Length: 334
Image (cartoon, rainbow, N blue to C red; front, side, top):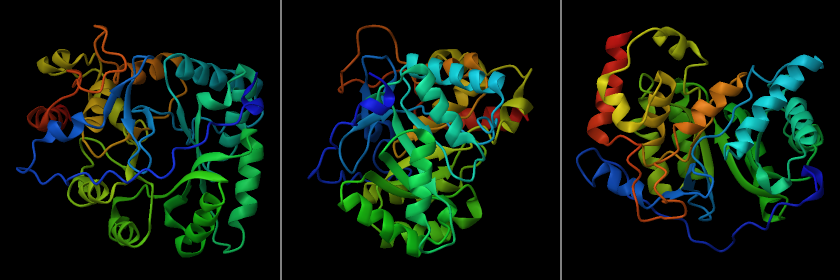
């Protein structure tokens, strides 16, 4: 059966939000809080719980900004399908897109159909991006048609555009069972004040923000608030749109990188990101099959039979002290 043939299983309902204790620096031990959120799946990829339901998703997803905006070029479409194929084969699940991303939605739809991906193999994540207070529902319908699906797992208000009109619409769709989760996104650190207001005011399931060892503003307020309110966190621009990894190209990795299984700067950056207990999933975008495999490997624990266990803390992730060391090493390298 193909992607379009299988409906996603019914989401867990009635589950209480997991009111995680906020990270306050010297308060609760950093990695102790992360322990309860982690599951090592049968695929070998570290999973994180969605606080609103308890459902788990892999800690590494796949973005589509720029990389999947390839139009109808058959060679580029096949390349994107190959990237998606490697992503799913490696245990990936969340793919994120937006109406803003040119032909990326249609590229995803092409890849899903070409690969024959079953509906329950993907956590379909997209956005509403319109200033028309009545245009959100129509845009969602077109997005779903582009993907080749009837229902999204998560829809977000892109860059909080017209959020006061679009969030109630998304909430109504969720209440009607037409949508799994709702959220808002930003790709700009300067908009954290508005984001924090929305997080306090609205019953969000997800937020999406930029975060990496150099762009750390969310550590001060946004990530602790997400933990307090039981909101899942998706991280966009983990490599600053590729500029960070390009700047580090040719620079020697710090000696401690091997202690956490990091064989590249990209893996070390991703380990830094997903080691924060508030982070649910990072969504690096790529056009290369070897890069998507490299990214997924950053969230793969040892092969010592830990699949399915929730009472272990894979030693692939740095603790609070080593997170500071990673940020300092990147700063020094640049």
